[in-house]
Image (tube, rainbow over the protein chains, first blue to last red):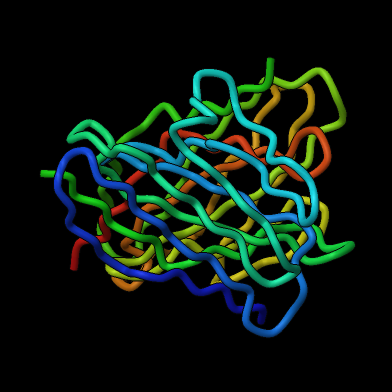
Length: 115
Length: 108
């Protein structure tokens, strides 16, 4: 099956710094990637849809200036949490959609802890 | 607006007992529904999709448009089925709306 990787798997940073999370599709080209956020014991919440070569589409309530998404190639999307604060601490998961595919393939997630 | 409801956060059954994880949805369009599973310390993965009408690991799910439900069933639960299960609805082009999830524990 399709494989999606994320890097880093875990990151701890100081409040006020920016953190970049990478999402890669390893064996296929993904025109669309998705970024989710998952709080402890809660469901995945879609943050934004990332389309290669165009601006990301953000869900209502998600600050686009806070969560910068770049989908520069068909195999890489990045999420940058700018000026991170403790309330941004969460589990961030990306997924990729195969062209003409029916479902999404998920990355292993990145745990962000902001001190 | 699209919505996915999983009424049970926790579900516990004994090994060999039948199990049903409930999922109800709300969507004005033609629904495409999925069940995802997340085993301990593993990534989320697709379990089954309604359009395939398949049985995976003994699990089945039938889309009932009249009741707007997509319940997941297995006649005889196994310990290795213990995991977090998410029902999901595909809307717009490829966006997914996930339910809150149900943690299934199968006791020996």
